[in-house]
Image 1 (cartoon, helix red, strand yellow):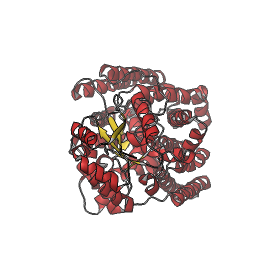
Image 2 (image 1 turned 30 degrees about the horizontal axis):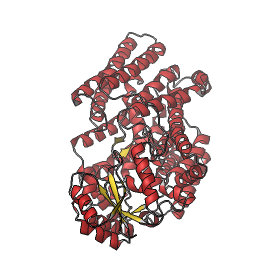
Image 3 (image 1 turned 60 degrees about the vertical axis):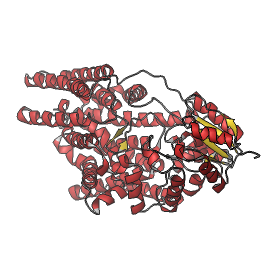
Image 4 (image 1 turned 45 degrees about the vertical axis):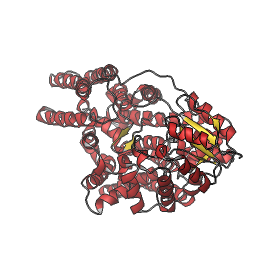
Length: 584
């Protein structure tokens, strides 16, 4: 995106011709760069499959193929997740024994959506430097933290509906900004297939643009209306087959107690607040990357999402009665996924804007403030103190920006200086990341559960525990259920959205030592329960198996004294010992 001096006067067909010389090479290149950075960025663990959110999202699809897996698990029976399409893909991959490949392709689809969106915007608004600007945007995006503004960012190296849908909604908005209606008709409903809630956001954006166009041009864009209608139909279908059991009060309680970073800004610390304000400011600056004549498109889409997010965030952060809980209840923080790619465009806007003189100085000052604020996010990894990250990452962009501004003031050819400045900025940002310990080259491991210790422990537990049996285990050891393919009483990862399952989950967590252990690993919890209490839990839930952590010697000794048989030992980092009821 840019306000390239010739953008507003060059004919669209000329612009397309000049920007298309890369063909599909540019989207593929940008997708590859983003993939490498997602694997190499030390804000995460590289590519993951069968780990983290897959503990919740993969079990249903696996159970469809192998009914013994996770049989009798109360959470799966009481609180099915809304991601029906992910369940279908998981069952497809599991049935053909190609689940690692399916998840790898799912992750790659998100990379391609990002690459296509970025290439499309760069070609449309900065045809003279589409490749170099696209690379810069991708480099900056690839070094973003995995969590920002209360949500996961679109640059997490894992196959997740939230990640893929975030990149798809970026592609959808790119189609809106470049007025590619057929793309919008295809991508809009597809988003709803992948993620119902993001599909709802897509509907709002399409309706808003439809209304603005109708008022502005006095005509109805029937292609856009078709896209909105199809998307709404898919959302309705998804909610029909997988209704989300929740209510406002329950979800607010869940936000405040279990997932405060995702939907309870009034509990955030200063750096979370500051980095979120930086996200809002940089996203707002991205409007100046568009020609003045096209900014109404931005205001109808990205601007609307930014306004909604900023308003909801403010209501929650300031604990405004009624409106604050309402913002939490509708989970306004999902909109952050819409903002993040455009915050990255805002971060490079000084290289794209036509502003000169005091206007450029003002833009640069606003950029500097927003960039410094977003760099305070906890998710960034630095070997040194925060100040070193702020200095080096800021200089990495500021130096090329100032060089470009000076050369432009001297009336040098911007068609050559802009690509050079963008490439220099890309190199400097990568150097700043590497110098601050933010990069570590990794090869992807596509195996389901990539950690051998946990795979071995799970295989041993699966053999020891009959299908349909439940394991009494620490809620903190959220991996036990997934790797063993056996039901557990409850854990800190599988949390219902509300309703009766939420009440049942709270009861179970209270009996397992309290939900506080889910938020603070050192809080007293399961490890403080007596052996008699553990056996009582096993009796209550008709279980013949109890797992005890290796760092709970009193419980280990007590289980042996009580005559329970040790059937699975700890395996390295899989620090649990599994006991079986005597005589069972």
